[in-house]
Amino acid sequence: MGYEKFLRNNNILRGDFMDFRDLIIKKRDGKRLSEAEIDYFVKGTSVGTIPDYQISAMLMAIYLKGLDDEETAELTAAMTRSGKVLDLSGIRGIKVDKHSTGGVADTTTLILAPLTASLGLPVIKMCGRGLGHTGGTLDKLEAIPGMRVELEPEEAVRQVNKSGIAIMGQTAELAPADRVLYGLRDVTGTVESIPLIAASIMSKKLAAGADAIVLDVKWGSGAFMKSPEEAERLGEIMLEAGKRAGKNMAALITDMNQPLGNCIGNSLEVIEAVEILKGKADGDLKTLSLELGSRMLMMGGIVKDRRQGFELLNRNIANGRGLEKLEELIYIQGGDPDVLNDYGLFGRAACGLAVKAEKSGFVSETDTYNIGRASAVLGAGRLRKGDKIDYNAGIVMKKRLGEPVEKGEALAEVFASSGNKCQDGAEIIRNAVKIGKEPPKKKPLISREIIQDL
Ligand code: URA
Image (tube, rainbow, N blue to C red):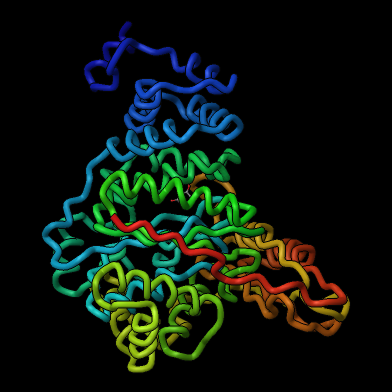
């Protein structure tokens, strides 16, 4: 009774007291949860009245039995309501947000955010930490010495009005239920679920207050969705949630059957993004950053079509304005902008090791999930909740899908704080990169675009 009173005093109960075990059992047995039950689950999660072990059991039940479209919409709405919704009306212009469903060597934000901001798009971007085998922009930003990522919303709004850009962690007040669920999903094998991913991403995006949202929905061996069809379904559910909330939405369905860039690991990924902004590197990471960035510029009313978006983005790589904007962002958020010209300021991993090809042929398959896992084993990601990250650990891939390889040639180089970790990471990569007699059939980087204008 004391517990029930506590729940009532904290406005957690809308109806009668619920025994959370009953809700877990209901979902375990494949039954629908009512709106009130979903609300109870989300409120209890954000206020901390449901213990982690019961939340984890519910997450596993949802993972195994799913949620229908209505339950997913209710979960998204309840998670958005679990905290504040940012008021961005103080920022001039159309605010366009972007979110990726998660991948390996996916550093598009660090490229497209300063580039689009340098073209006049107001960029206020909240991002997350690594999840499962995938990296997170927040961890990458924290690899920059001194960089502050905890900004109060009012401070971020002032910063965007002055400098056009702010990138920060999700504040504790926004979708707090997702913070808890995200951390538990990461360590309970419950990440790869369409309704959980859709509700996680869309609750945060809706709470972050942008007018329009571009989604990068990934499929493949390094993505949470293993087929383009699953990715399309996830994209459609998220677009519908955004549309219901009055947002202009677009989604690209993109390939994650190999790491997007060549570097995996926090400071390594920042360096690769900087090289692209300096015009010194090309490849899929740059192409996708420009594709997503041009959609953001279109939705923000800055360009009329994709071609013009590409032109302006490329221009601001060539004239250095994108890099200058990143430098300004780092400076105003307390980081050391000298890292952009002196990569040694990131520090260095104690050990490095080349992963050599055991035979000649073509790179026929890259098990990108395991490459992401290898980066965590090396220290670049978390194996357990709360693990400390080694910002200088990671992998530099030397070969892409379809490229020819000679026996003994380096497939990748790994970096870590000890020789043992390097050996462990190298072993995973050796098994993850397959060499065959023929190059594989090339898959398009973008397989579909879904646009949902209001
Ligand atoms: N990104 C998120 O924010 N949530 C997910 O569940 C997956 C990717």
